[in-house]
Image 1 (cartoon, rainbow, N blue to C red):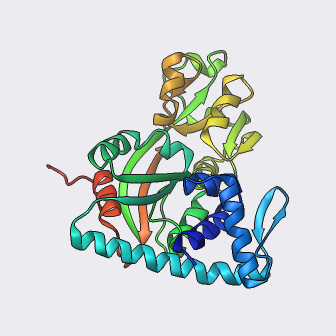
Image 2 (image 1 turned 90 degrees about the vertical axis):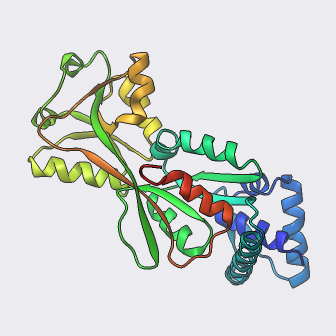
Length: 295
């Protein structure tokens, strides 16, 4: 049995999708299906099944996944150590972040990294923060970049940067003519927010509660792109990371207004598993995101 087959199986379970697993391994969907059938034939057990448009492991598949994931992780560690010994920067770096960070916060760093290390394949995924923590701990990811990072056991946290949150509204909204705004003006307004389990939602709610402000949620969604589209049509206002709305402000489809009586700063952090031995490619990726001051 090839390590690549185990990796394909683990990727299929992690993503729940034949097409995504195929893309991640640079093969066709039919090739993924064939490798899974080969495993099932070899062990005489059905390992995956479709449930609500998502592929899930069967009970036997869960057992197989737990062991296969450990084997794949050890193999990656072996590759990384040998590459480090040979001073080779190549291979794959698996990174996950949230939309508002990945699309707007480190695109320049990614371009610089890809240019500097053309033999490295960056696998960038967008996930919720809780899932990123889980995948970092399980070894599915090398690095996570998240907002409002929190200390957790076995997770190393590296501060990345901070960005400002601003009020956003459509150009037709009464707020659009203001240069700055008090948080008290938000009371009773129709509001478009992130889903409740997203850290940015929790931080905004804490600030609103601090000032006894109640907004009327008209939508709660899982990413910044949807929030911007809803606000653009005038359905409500929102509070969003300033870097993420620069294109719309520049194109005048949104207006961004500073909030004067509350500090809305969103910290960003890089996380990885404590004690993990990185490949040179992963080490260089983290170095690219965190350049030494004065260098």
